[in-house]
Amino acid sequence: MNRVSVVVAVRDGRPFLLRCLQSVLAQLSPGDQLLVGDDGSRDGTPELLSALSGRLHWVRKERAQGKAATLNTLLPLAEGEIIFELDTDDWLDPGALDHYRAALASLPGEVACVTGDRVYHYWGEGSTEYRWGQPDLERYQFLLGKQVPGPRVYRRSALIEVGGWPSDYPSNGRLYEDYALLLRLLDGYKLAYQPGFFYHVGVRRQGTTHRHRRCWGAISRYLANCALVRWGDQLRMMRETGGRRRLRPVRPETGPAFSLWRTDGSYVLPSLAYQTYTGWELATKAPDRPGLVRLDLSGELWLEPDALERLAQTLPPVGAFRAARIPVRWLEAGRKRALTDLGCFWERRVRGGGARGLVTLPLPPVATRIIDRRRPPGRRWPGQG
Image (cartoon, rainbow, N blue to C red; front, top):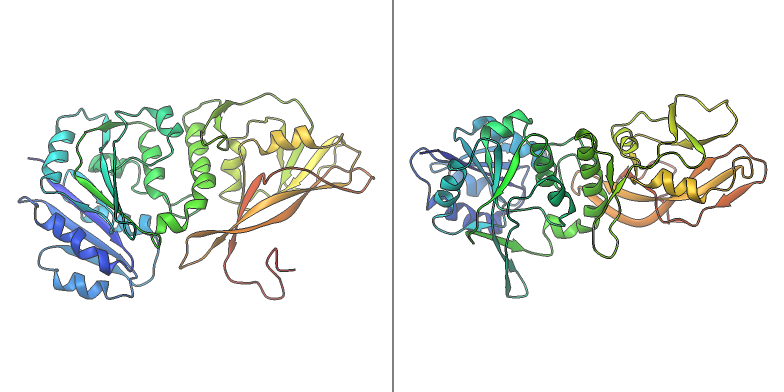
């Protein structure tokens, strides 16, 4: 019988953690494990885990590093062939481990993850919702979906092959690490669906997913387009229209040529790779050739997949303007909060080398920039006057 290692990452989740752990401990078979990672909790969670230390194994990080880093700390400790990821707010029905253990053992090795159905409990409202999963999603069906499948039961060998839970994207593994991991697994594996309502989800307004829900669109598009580049596709994920996601083919150059410089960051380079507009080049200094439009970038900024295409369609003829102002959406980054929408925009300039002054482009935000939540000395945040 394949052994199961259940991994739980927790931060300040003591009010909900006991039910989560008890639902697992009640159904562990010989050889199974329950591993808990405490990501710098300060609400008494370590004391609760110490009281249960005889029935589980737990590790503690003194400084919060995010969910992905915590789960990656637990991965080398897992001895089971199957890894069951469980969130702090969630719990399992009796028989859940045996149900998914048998499901994954019966599938070929090309299946790296099994998902299923979930029961959502909305705390504070007293309502319950049953959500069915989607059968055997392939790559593009997964990309066009608006939710991350769950529960998620992985093959340990596949997790180790892709390097565990990713953190090399805008939230640094603090948000949507499950979505990022499934996209990495789809590079060479498949997902499978096993029906059954064994997994319960607790939904609360103070939860991480709810508090940062406005960040889902930008970060999920970033991750999806990075995956499309890895897969070698000439498709890019666009902004949602009417509540639906869509893919658009990469289009040939139909407008001005862009010279992009100061591109020394880990976010902006992948965002350039998934542009639908191909008329651009990288530069390390200001362009000296006529006819080029200079766009200044920085490492904390990433572009929407159709940003250059929209700029090319909206900009006046090259030479007819000196600079153009475009809006950039800001996301706040900090130790306690992963990402938060500030609700204001910063105007970045595109320089065309003309002599007719400054123009303003009537565009929605074409890029997103992460800023540190501490105020720099002598500088005001956007929107503060």
